[in-house]
Image (tube, rainbow, N blue to C red; front, side):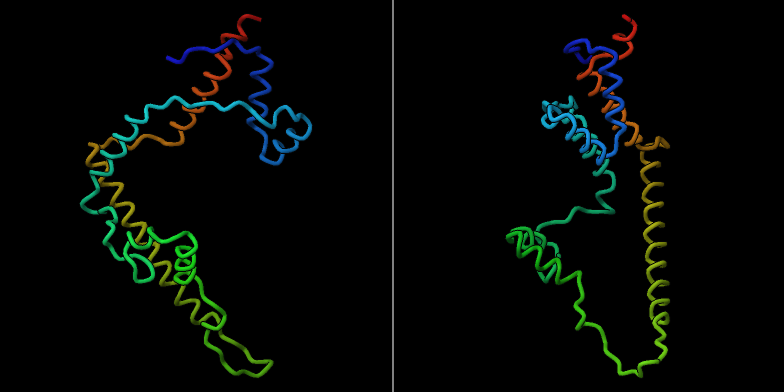
Length: 188
């Protein structure tokens, strides 16, 4: 169980809840109005990292045969292996990545046309859209099959809801920092 550092007045808890509900832009405006909020003390979240790491490794081991990890000798980008690519300096990796994933205007085929010509751009685009849609359907089918296999291996028990886990961890962190708001408000 988390230890309480200090009891926090109810109004401070209310302000904290209000601040958490602000957009990033509104938070920036608040920092301008209250310069003392510029530097908040660092907090540490108490997580059993060993347990979390073990859980992730167990789940990955269950699908390792179908989805093996990339090895350093596996082919990657630019004719390089994974190990060779990640051994390069950042600038070289970025250059290779951009070469593999961008097209220059010169790469497009040029056609001579009259100024008022109708260009049937959608012909090739439609085929490309259909090919993309087929790839997406394949990926979705693969994801659904993987989800089914995970459910089978977990004997019908789904993976924990990560959104809910994060919400609980945030609440636990807030409670560690601010104290129990119900306990502090009951003393009013």
